[in-house]
Image (tube, rainbow, N blue to C red):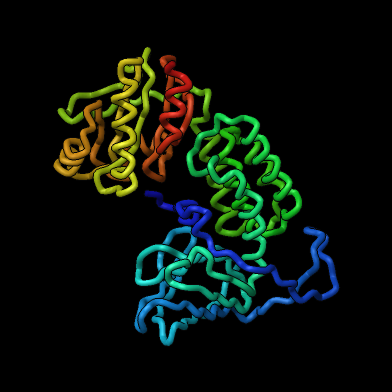
Length: 368
């Protein structure tokens, strides 16, 4: 799990609420020099959300979640199929509306305006969201990327032509919508398709200053900084840490092998969910000069060892049992888990943060 996570990226695009029509906003007659778009009148007093969702019983919990972290910001209950929220945003941002504290979700990009949501319990994925100009931009981006959904869902980037087409579409969106508060999401999507941090930074630099300073803009800036650190092609700094038997293990002792340096912890739900994938790839490729070295951010040795046994993690493991203060995590400035580095026999980083199908795809390409 991340100290700072982008919850919205965990939600498949087909679950994102759509608007039937994109309504024209009220124009002041002036044009913004930064975006070349009409300047619209907004409800500067804050936002209001008026929802009509059929199919849930009265009293059903409705939560408004932060789209960056997934944390609840406000809660209410359904009465006669209706609910409402009011508040004020510093900048437009992602919000998630959750019913009965379980999926599916309604996802919207909210600004300080009057928003209406209409839908049915059994088809929340097609709930209609109107009233937010930022959400309209969100819909535009989703529609633009819809033909490339398989690239994002499978992380299979072997189709070079399709990846190039998707990147071109994203670049055009960022250039056209540099003042849109949704534009940082387009930059994030581009980083999912290309490991070249230079391209991500190039797109980010096109965004307006106001957009860069939003929570999502700050997230992208943080990811750029982190990507430059321990960059692909550089030698991963050596370290020594104790294994499960308290014997010191040096990363450099693995030279000559392909190694997945995997940061995880017994208490990290996403890590434990990813472990079966790592196990499957270890078993498939271990005969091809590949292994895994787990670095745990646990604090309790018993919990660490129990998780290793329960998940069948039969490779090498190290930890100093200092949690987030783990010396290796601090050396690499790790602030989220699961996180990993795939290094080659020469110790150089080949790829980072390979999860799900992306790990198998990368190993297949180098361990033929």
